[in-house]
Image (cartoon, rainbow, N blue to C red; front, side, top):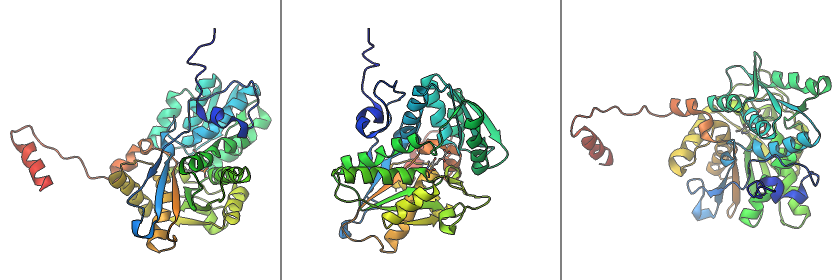
Length: 359
Ligand code: AN7
């Protein structure tokens, strides 16, 4: 007897099946990812110039980041190809997603992470989902070099975004944006670390345009943290450093694809300082009610500079991808916020505090 719950449609594979390289009959490994909200950002928009800005809130995926779109396809194909274990290097979100989808699939996950440089929530996720968590002395780039060799030496599938199935999954975010807006945006700002996601979006926008589902494609604006901005330097960099640990990457694996996305779309790369990133993260939280992690806020930080500089033309439709949820990194959030107030339960203290505050 088939389980009616098991038969419920869900996830990006079922919704975009014909556009994904998943064979008929494959057992789908999904947690109902995708279909994330596109939320208007009034504080970033400019009514007088008719510039509308939306956030694609990828933190609302099952493990709290966009990685789930790629992971459902990568894990489905790994299982289809009889793989019993997967491995990834990660600044945190890939490890959380790989751990969850591996748990779902019943395969073993090895995640290799830079010691002390991943946000607390992400480490908690990898541990809770039962991955074998391996911390190394080096950074993400060193971890990446280590794991890339493993598939030749052991029967283990690499699920970093060098795995082409990952990009196919992640391109569905571009499909959704066009489905949600009824057209492609004019500008798409998104964070760039290992450079898989910008490549995936460009693939997605291209496929919808080729199918006649969109007349235009956006300019792709790749946003990096100033201390980890190899695309601004024009070459890989040693010892990347930024508070946005998710994008603390000096040697992006999808360099050519990302460069092509920017060149073909007549977009650009830009960088923001850690201070600008934190300011944007805070504005999103306390002016728009959206809590994203620091790496995600780099897209809004990049847009902020262009808005202030008048570089976004009138009547533009702009999307910023917020790649991961703010709860991933509680430490950075707490550090930049004022301490909670401390009151005793003496009568009247709370009342006078409130009357003071509301003026
Ligand atoms: C929140 O988890 O590379 O340019 O190992 O977690 O596709 O790498 C994470 C990357 C942006 C950059 N925002 O995307 C990892 C990892 C968040 C991220 C990026 C990441 P790519």
